[in-house]
Image 1 (cartoon, one colour):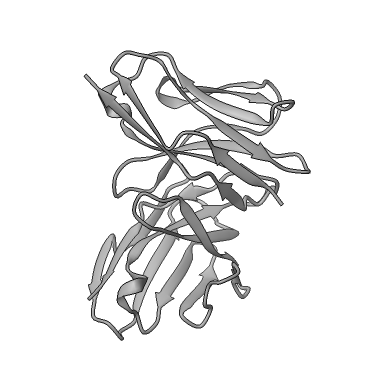
Image 2 (cartoon, rainbow over the protein chains, first blue to last red):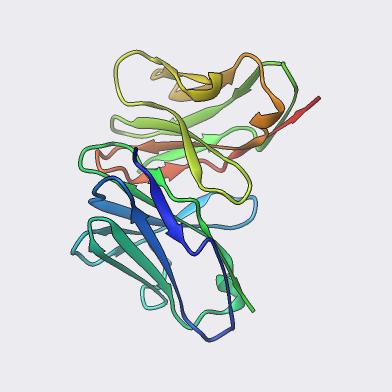
Amino acid sequence: GAVVSQHPSWVICKSGTSVKIECRSLDFQATTMFWYRQFPKQSLMLMATSNEGSKATYEQGVEKDKFLINHASLTLSTLTVTSAHPEDSSFYICSASQVASYEQYFGPGTRLTVT
Amino acid sequence: AQSVTQLDSQVPVFEEAPVELRCNYSSSVSVYLFWYVQYPNQGLQLLLKYLSGSTLVKGINGFEAEFNKSQTSFHLRKPSVHISDTAEYFCAVSSDSWGKFQFGAGTQVVVTP
């Protein structure tokens, strides 16, 4: 149980375009979802926290107009990177948690390459 | 505020030897502690967690960790590693029941024959 999927697993886009990444909880209802960014050989950096039906809470230094997060249902959250630039290239990982679960369940990640 | 320190960035180890990965945290409140493993180009997989109760926690793949409140540590151990244990290991701490984590910098374990 507690499986989280991400789609796509790898995406290449041209500079200036937007790309959407989906995060789904497949067998549970995710009251909270988290989006992380990971640079090579580095730890996970929390970008934002989203609760179903509410606006996302962004960490300091994360541009909310650039990284649009939508948590429209208890099983789906999306991250849209708007007007992507090469410096946005990274590994993006989502995770999900249930009410009072204390634990996060991680998706397999999405590698974004902006050319 | 809380923080997590993983004291070793890389740990080389021979196959079938024991390994210990060190994790220290700082927090002014009660914490929940986790160890995750990440294989290349993959997400994180939970190895074990401490929420309450026994301070010795056993996880998957033969890993265990001990919560030491006085030393604010949560070190991960495995008595005998395999080549397949080569991966990045992350310690994480949370003080919320809804799971906002603070991650350590990670420890790269490289197992050689």
